[in-house]
Image 1 (cartoon, rainbow, N blue to C red):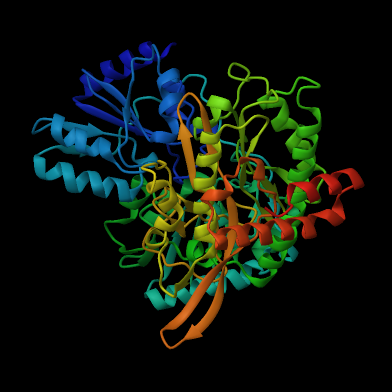
Image 2 (tube, helix red, strand yellow):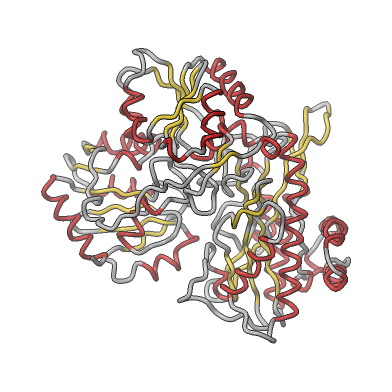
Length: 595
């Protein structure tokens, strides 16, 4: 069945059920970024494969709202689908609610499946639409009956993430959570985010592409915990450990019945951004609910000492893999056929040579020339192009390792860079450096310092349409809040930056149809000094990969920026060269020479 046929069937059922607008988000019951195939409803319905979007269907209109990362991709993939692209003005904002508020008449009904809509989003819809006399139906799943070849929910075996990597055992983590629960005055904490659950119980799996997560729910109280997943997924030894830790295993679907069985007046803590509406409504009538950022989300954002040690070593490994890749690329470009896809595979192979590698942390963005301007471009067999010894190549990639998660972007010239390309590259680099160099007082939030990364571009009337920095998990999600710099789906702009947080620094610039530029490093927030005005923090850049000086217009750099760059390049060589062969070492020495 083609998209237009599916759309026609949905409209027929909407008419029969008295539904004026039907809403489908790009989420699952856990509100994750990377959605398992079982819940990729928007891709099944429209053909759009991006990772962010919302759909609203009426009898007269069907639209996909997405942000600037996916404008080019969505225009192409939505052709002949019956759906129109609606460009978000501000990323990660529910502008479709504005549209419904303007278009729908009084007494209209908006419907959706509450299992895949967060309680937080439901609140926003309720606050805006109900006063207009628009009714909201949260219990209608129209599409599942049409989706006859729907993939099953993943059921692979899970495994333990050893404490030698995690740094803390699950009992220590649950004690930390329970201590915070006491502070919040609650006796139950509902965990729905898969990264929260994986971190809390030191378990990992293969249920979600690119993230080592397990599809599950969890509940923690004062003296025990419940893990909602199928029991036959758990190896016998791990099952015994969980039982010894007073963690009971209950079938995945029973979470909805379980919360209904809680005693009257139970004080429950949950995160409205990750708890789905169906689950919330199941407990709402008889529980006293307290909302906030989930406790594990806040705890795991600050890496412990063991994790920080692993991250330091991890960046060397990942930097070695990247160096070997770029050396290979420069020495083979023009001599053999290299495409975006084949280059991505070679990079994965170099990472796979490193200890504890488990796979990519996201789909490699290998954008040559105009493809680099598509911010979340993922080469396919249909779009793949050959790299030639000319033009700009943007490579955004990362790895999942047992000892951490990486995310790094480098933009390089493959030959003959223009003065305009150098100017744009240098303005972006200035933003990367300026943000990396700042000191800031305790309590500073990411959005308060984002302008440091954008100012050089702003001075020339230029900008970019994505956030500047996102949190990164530890062998978990590559995009993982609550810390953020600027707005971002994975972050909370009200969360202050704290020592131990791992976060990205990634300004960019994109010329549609020509090229894209982004320079991304990860850094750790560290203590700087105590002054009469309080505690000050700084960023320590942990990513280790050379920056292509062939694309730099030195005249645009300040002396302090040149000093930072030279020191960084020197550190890259010092840290990585012991793990390179003679030819690679000589090549990197040249790439990191002072400017």
